[in-house]
Length: 210
Image (cartoon, rainbow, N blue to C red; front, side, top):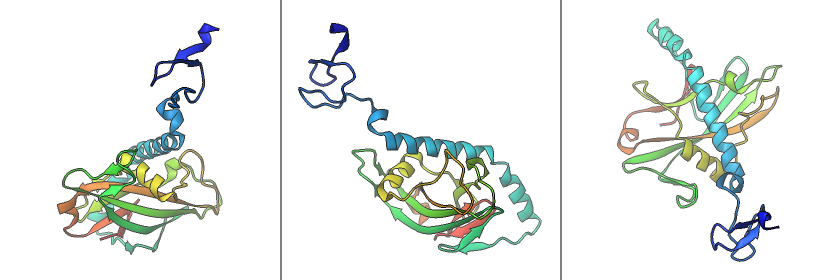
């Protein structure tokens, strides 16, 4: 019987092994991952997205080569549809924030001298076949010089929780005719972001957000 007893992480009193909360002090006995299943899942999604972005980085070389040859690129506005071979992607909102969520509880506060640039977008499968996560185009924030910025993992997870709209399918295929929403956040120098034009690059296309 004693083997089935453990000590509470907070008050130290003996409690039954496997209980979620201490009956004496009410302290949650589960680990962080079990207490925050949604945040754990979102973190896994963002990590896979970053891996996918790194694996598809070779597309940038082809893009730069086309630009050097004089290929005219189209710059879209927020709300306009960007089409790829099998997807329609629309940046629906862009906003600048100092704080996302509660910094005391898995939220994100911009670092000193920085601002958080948050975007929301929709993605629709317009093909007749499922589209996997590794077939999605890369999505980055870029400046006028073409410098690319990857999403901030912590801030993106906090923003997804704050807005409650992110239902993107990183772990499974996006089936034909289905539309999902996604969110990303980029931490950028406030002074830099105040200057010039800024874009969201989706594959070979750009959406101007500032």
